[in-house]
Length: 243
Image (cartoon, rainbow, N blue to C red):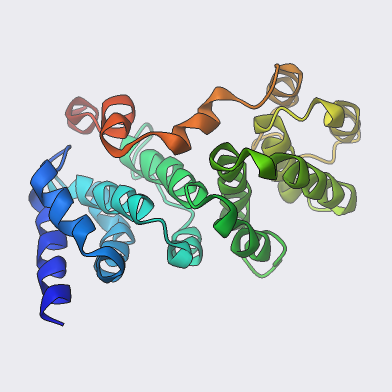
């Protein structure tokens, strides 16, 4: 119990860490292993902080990324239930970054995340934002575990043929597009022509371009980025918050 409390205190320090947490602090938190999951998850889900001033605004991003390092499926349902994350003003970066990172951190679990993700995707009681993000996370999982791709494509296609919800259809198409499933091209275009797709989620031109591109989109590889490379490539960047 003493050790868990110590981990919790380290996690609290993430609120003062700025845009990039110190390596020694990250090391202490990750050494907590499973004991770090609960305090990290609580901080990651405190999305009101994303709208606060520096340095508190960065804390949910740090917590989210460290959860991804711990590789636990405990994060799947709680993170998906937090969606949608609202922007307080047009162009606010941190809520968008949080949502993108959530899908990647879930996808980092690879094959272990597949079953809980399908459970969300197939449950109509879930908010569509959560179901859509679950599909996105599933595509990231295929980057971590490439052997999953063919089965995921097959299962998404099966649901596409059964969907009568324009929003769900759009999220299914977005997943196929990210996976570069060119075999689905004609079926997808037929759905657009029949006006059965919510084009605010993925326009037909975007779906066409991605489906015809060679192989899965390169962005799926982001799920494999090591922690510090993730900060280098994805931020957060202080100037974005200041602007």
